Length: 432
Ligand code: GLY
Ligand code: MN
Ligand code: MN
Image (cartoon, rainbow, N blue to C red):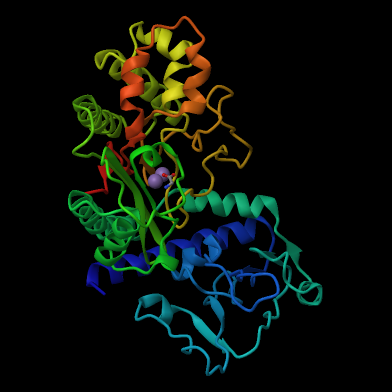
């Protein structure tokens, strides 16, 4: 571990200690227990699906795969980690990383799934619903107090320098995967082989990706969360969209790139270039005090300009936005908060924890906050040819260039996504 990261992690822990102490004092609590969560086995089987540790637990230890474990926080005391470490010859015993947090905690290795005994007035948070009722009763604590969870979500929204360093490293590792994916596409690989090239170059196994990689060739590039990997390469190669990440110390990269293939019409390659330009323009708009909803609306405005410049729409910018044309081409939001979860917490709340829902005409937007230094967001404009959304416009009198859309439709769509930190004076693009 580099000395810089070492120092930053210690400072991150000091920051958490102090913020938790204030929060516990405000709520007149003596202790807070955070449950890691655990995976569920498939029905009638003894294998489980992939798992992600509860975010507020990860905030302290940065491990995304800890299960059946507890963390107890008390003001002025060292954090107590009850780490499930069964005597088990089926699996490799639980190992601790060589990171400063290990020396800052009292670590109790537990051979059984036990809950800690809580001191004084206590609360517990985490995915506790599937814990045995007897465990919850024995804890004798307030479960999941909403005001505490919202305050901790708010704490996670603003990243420490340690967290930004981790997100930057996650991006660096993910970009190596994206370069390999592009090379595999140039080499005429199919979706599964592009995925395998991505995993190899970004040095990760499939069960540890922060979200299922989206690797779509041709029309699959227009399926927003396309979830398969075709085994065979298609004969025609119009396009590739890769939306793929990487974790580093729990922190997630979430990067998308789109490419025109050898069989794409020239207009598609020009649109890919225009969408890179739009992403760059929107990244430059990231700064403290900026409303993310306003930035999202700016995306629609610029998207309309692109549709007009590339002759997909022959009306005005105002008409394209007002009549929902840009929304049919881009039905998702401009981006979201990013951190220990890909779609991180507190994006749709005011600082006091009250709901700040997405505007009615942009229901898919996941972040309605005013940007502040320390936030990390994705900026991910898209432009897709999705029949289900475009079909209703065919019966309208809107000046849409249907022959060109039909020509571009086999290319599926485009999304370009970077991860951007808000700084005191503007932005820091973490995606190299
Ligand atoms: N990878 C999912 C997203 O971009 O939000
Ligand atoms: Mn993404
Ligand atoms: Mn994203």
